[in-house]
Amino acid sequence: MTMNLSLPTGPAKLDSSAKRSGPEGSGAANFGPKAKKASIALGWSSTEQKNRFLKSYAQLLRENQALVLEANAHDRVKAVEQGISGAFLDRLTLSPARIEQIVQGLEQVMALPDPVGEVRESHNRPNGLKISKVGVPLGVVFFIYESRPNVTADAIALCVKSGNAVILRGGLEAFASNEILVALAGKALGATGMDPDLVQLVPPRPRELMDELLADAAHIDLVIPRGGRDLIERVVSRAKMPVMKHFTGNCHVYIEESASFAMARSILINAKCQRPGVCNAAESLLIDRKIAGSFLPGLIAALLEQGVEIRGCAQTQAVSPQVKPATEEDYATEYASLMISAKVVENMEEAIGHIARYGSGHTEAIVTASLEASRVFTARVDSSAVMVNASTRFNDGFELGLGAEIGISTDKFHARGPCGLKELTSTKYIVEGWGHVRE
Image (cartoon, rainbow, N blue to C red; front, top):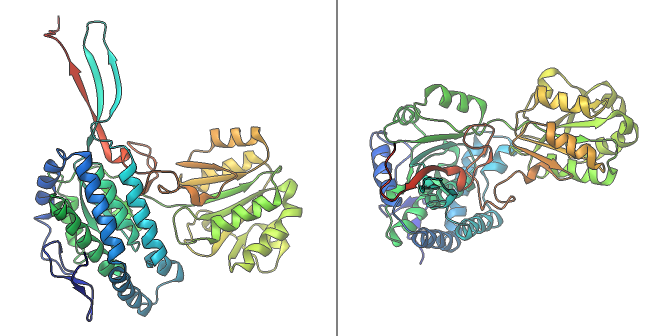
């Protein structure tokens, strides 16, 4: 089954009703009502039907890989013409390997238990009433994000499997890629007897469309912004419905005095350099003073070899003339590029204090051979994920076995950390009696 799609001169076009909109769409008035109507019907869908959709979507992505890559190439050419950074281009880029990872994520979501109707708690009261707390969909999710088209497929899979309709608003830079991914989802929905309006793509221009949808609390139950500070602050200030924030990722790697140098170097380089533009990449190195003299030269050399610009404290600068002085702003910055701040700390107490002051509550890691140090660090560091002898890059829905994620929430209310299926549901109580009346 291959779709009749072509890319003559611009973003991908689809000769199918599954195509939701163009880049200069005419208005937002219909998105919410269509999504709400579709979400009500989805609430009655069986797990088997939702899994058939995921299987069909995965198959379509594999069969139309060349078309997806062509649309993505169009986006990347335009982005390069606009002078975007290397880290931004990496976030935007799809490859056969990344498409296969998307498909594997869909298959993992398909294999996971359905959270809708799941009995989370159950007990019997002394008066004979049976009380059950069960999972229910949120309804309609409005997802606003930037530059990462792989997230489009993740959001579609998670929302549909958890019983929610999703309205997607990606960035202009990824519109051709997102349009193809949404069109394929529409095909898969139709092929499995589900409403294609469960997945709708909002054009990124004009920007007022986003504001109209943020005011539509009658039809949209939750908005999830995933992007830069300006985007998230704009969404929070305008939304009339609850917001689940995927906020900044100022992540730290702390090397404690008992750490192995080889392990510390391996984890640091992976956390900073594997994909420096993503939110779970390390942005700051903290190292215990007791081992700084022996560890820092090798760590700095390894970072410089990878092309990392280092901004550090006086002791870090003393190791290499290539280390620039760090400012307060540097310690608080999510670089999302090959840059890192570095600081020598007296002990773990100072490291925890530094993280509390400058961190964003996203992901922190400790490298240590001490069980006691790991226990103290994990107990006292307030973050959505704390890693012990593992890279910060593991704070990811796919890596944590959630199949995929719609974002990593730095909020504490409703959901925190990678947001998978359960985080896209709420609960309701079911009370069963036998003619009970309250006295």
